[in-house]
Length: 163
Picture 1 (tube, rainbow, N blue to C red):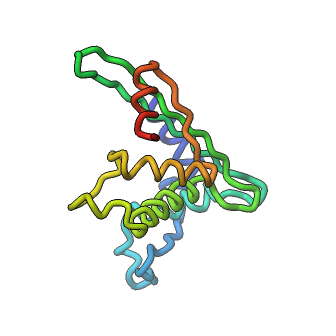
Picture 2: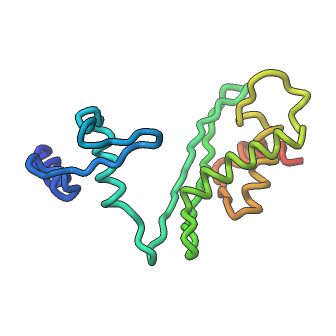
């Protein structure tokens, strides 16, 4: 049954054994008749996926994200926290995927350029409250909002950093 499902998926994608596949070149590479043998299987797959999964002008994408945190407190008790976001692409064609990736990178750059983290030496991770709290505020202003739920103690600890 799994083999039949895989064959059906490849048929839907247009990747059957006798099908000619046009491979689009990745950035910085140009495939011609002379060097087409250098194309990697992943390039063919990407070309097929780009053609098959391209959004039509009337369509929008959707990003669903959920983070589940398991917390062990100093007293060895445990609790859970769930943080979720649902974001649709805009009707003007801006995708939710582009917004979540692009805005996140832009906000990280902005916080760094504002000098908010000068007192912290070395490579920074977004798990530090000094980094992620202003980042979440800036992302919320752009419509990227996570809804948090879970135990009261975890929610209180999370919001203590906001102050």
